[in-house]
Image 1 (cartoon, rainbow, N blue to C red):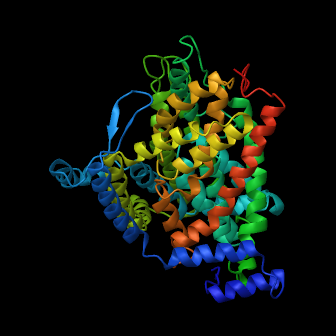
Image 2 (tube, helix red, strand yellow):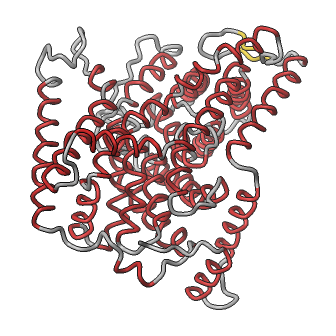
Image 3 (cartoon, rainbow, N blue to C red):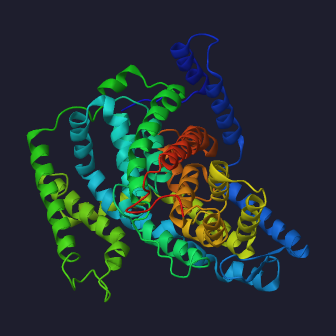
Length: 521
């Protein structure tokens, strides 16, 4: 087993060996301070309970002050709601279970875990990792994980559940710190959520809101779903290189060392003959499963298409599809290798996997209540509208205006996790304003996507935060919010700077954002 040195003092000694006595860079000391302060705070569950109290108090104060804004899209007046009103207190009791069961990541995580647990405990996942360790050159391992993470948005949020924990396991198997692998993959999945080599479900979601906002100025304006495709494809490679550099130059050097025995840790040895046979049949089963899904999706009038021909039913079924594919492939592998002998073994594996999710479920319950209360209070909408208004009132122009817009979107993302909810508020303000200044609706949308993505991995309201903390604690039992933020801040800050500069360079070179679409209006 890999033994990780978790003592903070030993971590500092390890860094000192790398950088020399008294030469520890200031950025490492700053991140150490973030981790110390963050981990000195109460447990995340307690933090969200405190946050609930703060939100309730803020709702009382701002409601008494008569705080309100006009929604830019609907023109409806949005008032801060006092959460201590009779109706709202009743709602806290009557909707508590609903808040929890309808918490978006909960079902995805638990359902997917059924299949992943069997595939992992049956040995299929381990076999794939061991094979990949030998297949991917060591210098490209970090880049491969980030690249896969960035493109995982093609299957919605599945990357959070599958890739991020695997990134930690892969790094551990080659004698590198698992939290470095987790952080790099997390940065790719969360920070690169807008970028992809393909059109994803996010594109039509945002383009529809952008088009509605643009038609406030030009009623015939059309925003196509591929309007940012070229820029986002190029962004995949920029983010892959950037996150790789950040991981290997800034994040990994400050992590605790792994004992020398780690280089010979289990998981690096080649597969045996029976394991190769099991993996072959499991992969064949997985591919056949994908073929079945394709057959149910691609043909006109297929079962997983709706009446309009859209593949929306298939997209909504991604969670179940992934669960079934991993479950069946895991069973096949385990059966061939002898890891399971009956259905009872399979059920036991699934149960053991679900049993590890206890702390996640507790944190998810409290976090779900906090997010619900915050939404009921309308505080997030008020902050977003006022933030948009403040930027509009600065009178900025050109590149400076775009940079300011990206920063405002990044800040608002810290308190409003939903990309569509934020854009529904911001698009009616900024799209028409920017169009009148000569910036296309598609260009404004691209700038928004940068800001919306860069702070995903440090956003306290990010729905998958409980899952990430649970994954971290497999390797460091003391890991908390401070550990997470000290790991992810370098990625977030680097993305804001580099991705924004890349966008400005793209604009200055007058390159198309998508087919026939530029920044100019």
